[in-house]
Length: 389
Image (tube, rainbow, N blue to C red):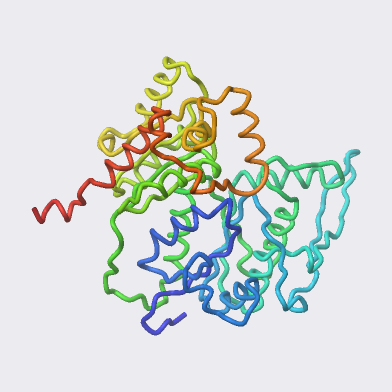
């Protein structure tokens, strides 16, 4: 695939909310080698005169490679102006009934139920573009559970938000080409695998040799879940930092602890790494014990640029601390209700006029630690800056 001296163009195909940080990481780390087409790009909306969903479809046609990433969300349904281009999709599913009898059914997803991601893939396959699909291992495991319960109408998946995620995965595997699905477990694993696949695919492409200057090395913040990103990003937005802050979602405390050496090694060139997690307790001895466990997992050669911040008892407490009208500290029951109600649907939204960061710093010692770590890493000179002095 000759590219006439330009970077290979890669379209990022995925849902946003569950994968926005993965998408940003991929663009940041591989943007010097590949030209990414992604809807977060300010230039993406330049395809004027189209419905926003059709802008996404049009962008697929500009790519050399389509990278599809699938995790827990099915995504928004296609509401563009070209529904006739996307026919009903049918897959054949084989499973066993409760009595152990084999059964085959045709699962039909009508046009009105197709997600934007699914339509982007239909466009990619129709244009014979090279498609690479990556799916979280937890999602693939749950797909197998779903198929074993195919005839159970009351089945509700635990990880994904719709069984249509499984139908999309099976649809991909039934394509005539590029139907391989590569599993990943976390952000580092995904980045490594996408890097290898894209570099392998570009072997026959002409890639420009000129260096690309980038921004200051980012501050990496490891968090347990997507909601934590929302809370931490709200704090970061009040600070006016010079360096970018990238959030890496580890999908739980156990995954963070288990994969910590891998994360630290992958982001060793960052300005600094903040490990941000809920303490889940007010007991100082328990907090210190968990901190010791985390420190023991950090490679000694990188420990100087790592800070551990445990929100006491959890990050939601910070919301009460920075919100002007809230009662602080909140009771455990109020904190539990707030967490439950505000995580049901959608992303966390706080009115900036209701935020008082200074109040939060006075109220919450763990919030002070987080802000102090950010400011410390933001003011640390780069190696190139040190050599100039």
